[in-house]
Length: 395
Ligand code: FEO
Image 1 (cartoon, rainbow, N blue to C red):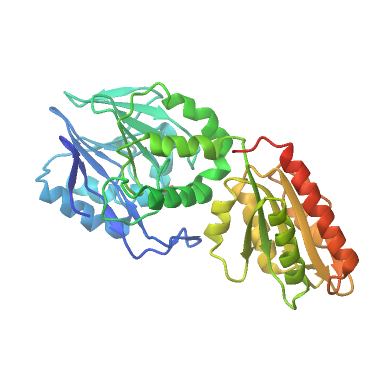
Image 2: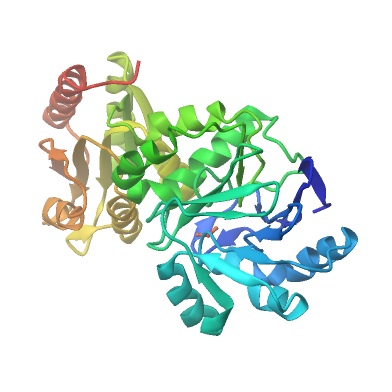
């Protein structure tokens, strides 16, 4: 990434990872990502906010050299995860007087993860400030976005919030600012669904901590800078709220066509009732697309054939993912087909221990669907329709 001055004396000095396609060896990144780092030159002190993934540390170092930076006083570590902290040891080698400013928990984690010595740290309390001369940094403890040690940094005079992962997007782009709003929205929603959604309740509670701040810009550590902060703040407000959309996700697999026949019929029944349907064939889908759909949907219906009396392994994985991501779903149901016996319902509902949902009576049939089975699917569609009508829906 080129060095770009986002405001006088404040530079973006991080790196774009155009080719990365998997994060944590788990999360698909169809649009790559970036590791943003910001250099602030105050009249008395120079600060680096977060660093980059260690695979990109040479880019960060080159960017600092291009700017002629000979001294860094503070490295602000908003988060200990290595995609932001991993280059700290290299920066400390080049700028040995620099101190790491972070929460006490972050200090402990950085000492564990990166073997940094204790005397390199300054820990800060919630709302503590440090002066850079003509600029002031305020630290806002904001745990669990998405690790326990996280904080946000607010640059008072320039009204910039540096929230690290919070509000970020996995998006490699040459745009420094979020000008392509539909693209950034989708990437930020994917990011929220995969990283932040399990912490929705705590984010909803803590987000009040930034309500009183005058924010002109939000500069996260992944994806473009929000020069119109309301864009992402409004999106988060909806995503973390308890309101859901009149939507049904159908996550399915069919081996010999019986479950597929049920799914096809059921999709049409829901459409007839003006319910938005989002089907995901789990043998083909990008699992991140399923995660995005989980941000707003009121209901998920899981559809599976029977494999050794249980659900198909890919269905089990998807249900595990739903349980881990803890979406604000209100209702779950299961449909499926078996040959001679099954424990689909016990197995799949048993996985969903993290989320409080109402289970709507499943439809599990023997063999290929027959007339009475379609009647059961009609009943399920009607029940979902009625339940959604009673919900607090996003209009
Ligand atoms: Fe971007 Fe939690 O690291």
